[in-house]
Amino acid sequence: AAMAATGHADTYSDLDLIVYYDRVPSPEVLAETPRELGADQYRSTPWSDESGEPDADGYGERYHVGGVECQVGLTSVGALERLIERVVVELDLSEQWLKIVSGLHEGLPLHGEGLIEEWRRKSAVGDELQRAMIAMRWKFFPWWYFQERLRTRDPTAWRHEVLAQSVYGIVGTLEALNRRYFSSFEFKRASSFVSELELAPPDLAARLDALFERDERSATEELERLVAETQALVAARLPDLDLSLEWGGRSTNPGERETSWD
Image (cartoon, rainbow, N blue to C red; front, side, top):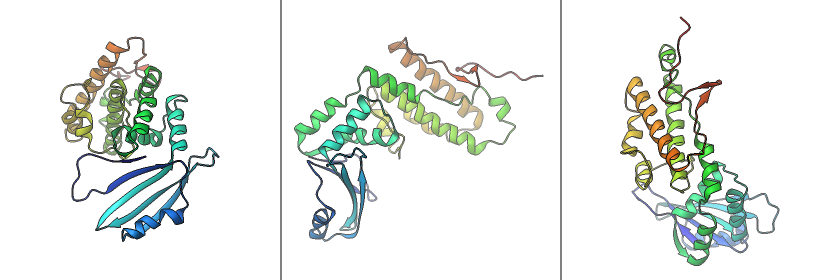
């Protein structure tokens, strides 16, 4: 089976391809194809799924053909099926695994469509996985709660870090609500990504971008609104899920504020 990435290519784009084998050939055999293509700058990096299975070894290849960088992942059918079980059954939601399974759903099948569709069915986001994903993402540093205190402490770099993590939390929660995979690893093309969400706050992509362009006060107000709107969307569909936000033992839900000691 083989899959390739699909999306919005430009003159800086590379070619992404994943090839699945019953058992991955040796590095010497794998290198023959790039040589036949006249590739240059060839590099191969071995990896393993650490299962100890005989088909566990895989490789990542990078090379250039006609000036275009080609990134090829080569892994086994068994390794991917173990990974799917690790995510869906064991609920191991590391960013790396989520990125791989996300690619399985976003990629374009080139060969072995039946097998790839079977993997997609097995890795569909069911109720238990959806809840685990939301629980993983529903964590925010409540800048709105501490805003008045923090304004006097020159926290510009930290504030932008919080904004970035908050965007991952909002998008990741909404992706799970829509039963889609999300990984914060090398998160790109955000506008296109979130535009496909059926359940989301209005004008989400533009509002997320604006968080980094606005002044501190208005950006904080918008972040608070986005968290509240996301909270409401999830609560309407999963009313038994605990979506309360706390920090340091204090409730810090949208609308709540720290009070000064004087």
